[in-house]
Length: 166
Ligand code: GNR
Ligand code: NI
Image (cartoon, rainbow, N blue to C red; front, side, top):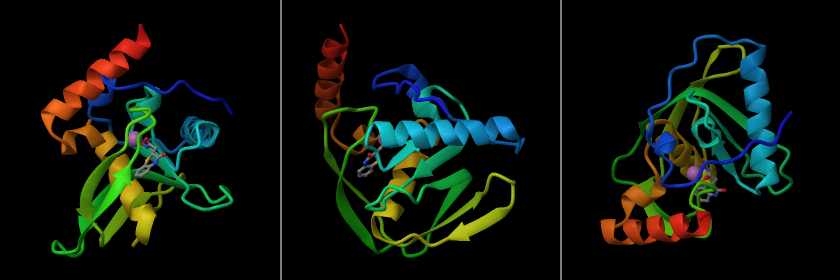
């Protein structure tokens, strides 16, 4: 298990579309373990492989109080169950440190995914887990929380984060 470095906006790698996982082997298991360890280290409630520079469709999430119930979703897809039910949530992102923005998303979704063995599963997440899984699935398609806000705000966040890096 290794704590990995998290890429920050506007790193171009965060804009890549991640590749489907086809091999369910021990490398995949250690990637998932690294993601979980890195998520806990940086006090996140979710993390996508692209955020640690790995271009694969793997995400993890843990919205529990005790931080001992990690979910692993391989090749996740989201189906909106009710287009009319939406909710706003003040989202944060470990790749956009220090910024919080309200994002409106569907509240009733179903997630289809594969587990570490490649077996297909589905869940209907409740509350925050549904928000986080949609946020993480966006990462796999190169999409970030800041894409939901105005471009003026996005540019401001971009230059602030670039200045912090220098
Ligand atoms: O730690 C995180 N918190 C969070 C809060 C509200 C909505 C989504 C998230 S995910 C984020 C970690 C992260 O950047 N995952 O990609
Ligand atoms: Ni994020």
